[in-house]
Amino acid sequence: MLIRNFGHLWERRYVSWGRGGVKGHLHGYRKPTDNGADFRTQIGIYILFDKNYVPVYVGQTGKGNQRLFARLRQHQRDHLWNRWQYFSWFGFRRVNNASGKLSDFDHPEKIFKAPGLSLLNEIEGALLVALEPRLNKQGPRWSDVDEYFQTVEEELEDRSVSEALHKIDSLQKAVDHLNSKR
Image (cartoon, rainbow, N blue to C red; front, side):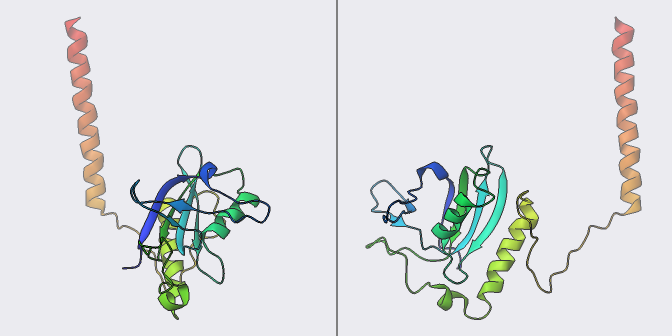
């Protein structure tokens, strides 16, 4: 299993960004009685949403020292700073329920080894294609992935046109019938 936990539609305004040497955090919990966990060092995929809950950006975290909190903080200051209000994230690091810390066993070097970064690219790419967020400037970073387009059978297309014309004719007859009763 790759995705171990996630947060859906977290509000940017409730993130503790930190100030004056005090670290911020991305604290969350499963249930109110939980101690919770700080997801600032989480690795995985994230999506930024505008105020209308429309996805505007898809990103990944886990390359080098880039973790979830650092990427979100970047977006607080970059060209996206005023374009998002909510975010969802899908994390690969497990939570130790006793301590609330993210597992050291699940560090990117151990999860990904050689093909790991391409795995991040594949998941991110699938979300980019499916959601088409308007603020992503790049497309999927895939290698050896082919897009296929649906074949349109002429017989089915002709039948669809014929069915549409038949429905229009039936509706026109119904309207004529109603008008004749007036």
